[in-house]
Image (cartoon, rainbow, N blue to C red):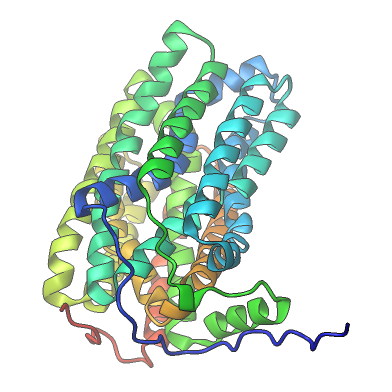
Length: 422
């Protein structure tokens, strides 16, 4: 019997007013869970940093800069993979997609641990980045399911405060593991962490997708949602701005071991310095979660972008004249702090118009932000010349570009406040 063709769901720009989805989890546990899911990606990156030199020697990597690919290729592929989990989460629900990504994370961490060559290690890292993209997209979607406006930006900042605990301890954890075992056991530790988070999510996280927002996976509907996200001026301006700022963060993480530990001679002090930077970001995110209520996400983030550009311009003068480790750490600490006043706010502003298609919008936002940011980070990391000039020069360019993108999104009217807390 013939059946009429299925009509793809209509892409809408307004959310339907409905009662909130029941949610039994408390605020503190919710923040902790979302932070730990996202922190698994940071753990997979930061815990490896002290081991890059050892991996380079053991796997006979010919080019010193190639070791950065262990980090940057994971970031880039995670961004590329982010284009798909949102549509799946809009169809099958947040829990199912998130749990699939967590299981893939643990399995591929074990594959990385067993990789016999640098080429196979890179292949496993690339696949791990692609298949664990739900860890990047789905938490953002779940937060948008439950919050909006400046409340969403505030909660994202609180998530980031907890999230930053991982970069604080990860390099020291990696260095400690290498004291008692080989670098392969570092991947084993990340697999165990993923198993613990998987159990937590499976036992405690309720589904947050509203039944009326569930979408069929029709290519025309998916492409329509992508076009809507890309065609929404408020979204695309802040997405591109976030990609530029993320690029500076990725470039810093990719080149941190060579730049701080080797060029500036920090040596075994590197994990402590890296942890201090993460602590600065955590404190700045906590401050942002408070002041964003008073001043609004747009005002806070746009002022932070201007200060970010200025701080890096002054830093570049000292880079040209010659600087020591502690001068670099001082300026980089200020820049890293300002990134915390930009990222969560840019992300929340970009996601605000898309309550009815939060998963697809989060995928598009994560893809453009992380893939472009990851690509820029790879290029800057590979341009490393034994000095901080490529990194700081790129940070100046990114800050100026992000401010222009924000101005474009807001129709060239800066420092406005459009959403007020409830």
